[in-house]
Image (tube, rainbow, N blue to C red; front, side, top):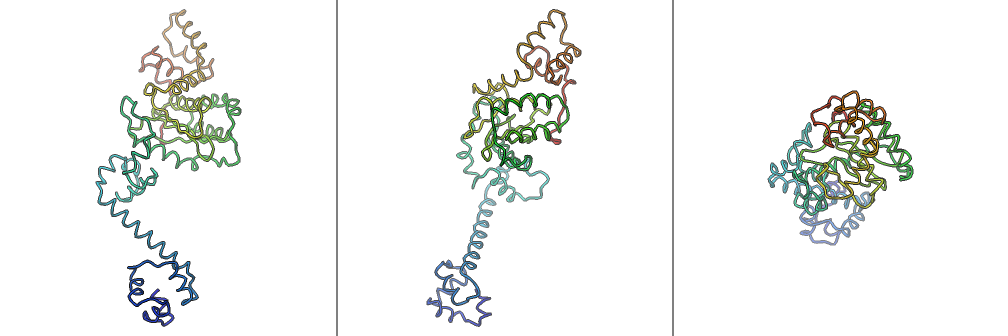
Length: 350
C-alpha cells in the first residue's frame, strides 16, 4: 500500500481522510497490526483505481497463510521430533531426500492426511490391528496404505472411461493364471496391471514399511476397486498368492465403502480372510487335484521329488514355486526344502 501511495503522491494522513478513518487506524493497517477488511479493500479500489479490491484481499490471504505456516512449523520444531521421526519411520520414508526434520514432519502429515500427529489415533482408529500376534504397528500400516494411494495414478492408467464388472473379472481369471507362469517382474508391473486396468481395477505394488505386517489391501479409489500388494516376502509365489487373495476378496466380499486390509495368514479371525485364502488356494491348485497328487506320491513311495513337483506344476499350469509353497504351507515338506524352485522378486524392481 505504501508503494502505491508514494506512486500516487498520497500521504498517510491524506489516505486516512479519503478512507474516512483515523490516522491511528491507518497506521495499524499499514503495519499489519489490524486486518484489511473487504470494506477497506473496496474503499482502496476507489482511491487507487488501477488496483482492484480482490488484489489486496488475495495478497492478505497469502500473507495470512504464510504466517500460519510459519506458526505451524514453529509448533512442530518445538515438539520431540526425534521421537516422532522414529514412530513414523521418517528415516525409511524420506531416505535419499535432503529434507530437514521439520520438513519431513510436514510431509508426513500430508502423507497421513492429518493436521497434527495428535490426531493420528482418532483418525486411524478403524485400523483393527489388535489381533496381530506379533504386534504390527498401526503407524506403519497407515503410512503404507497412504503411500499406496499416492502411487495409484503414477502406476496405473486413467480408468475414468472403464467400468468395473464382477462378471468380466470372473471371465478373465484364467488370464491371471497365465501371467503367473512367468518369472519376469514385468508380468506383474506391466502385464498384470494392464489386465487389471482393462477390467476397471487399479493395482499398486508398493514395498512394505518396517513393522507393517500387511500383505495386501482392497479399497476403492475414484469409484473403482483398488488392490495394493506389498510383496512382503519377495518371492513369486507369495506375491501372486497375495494378489489372488485380494482378487478373492473382490469376487466375494467387495464393499466400495469399506477397506479390507489383509495381514499374514493366521493373524486374523475374520472369516473373509479364510475365504479369500481358500479362493487363492483353489485358484492355483484345486483341492481335488492336490488330493490325487498326494495319493500318487504315497502309492509310488516318492517323497515329493523335484521332478514330480515339476511334472505336477506343468499339469496344473502353475509355476513350480507355487507347488513348493503349497506343500510347505501344508506341512508336507520342510520349509527349507526345494526353495530353489521358487523365484525371488526384488522389491526395488517392482
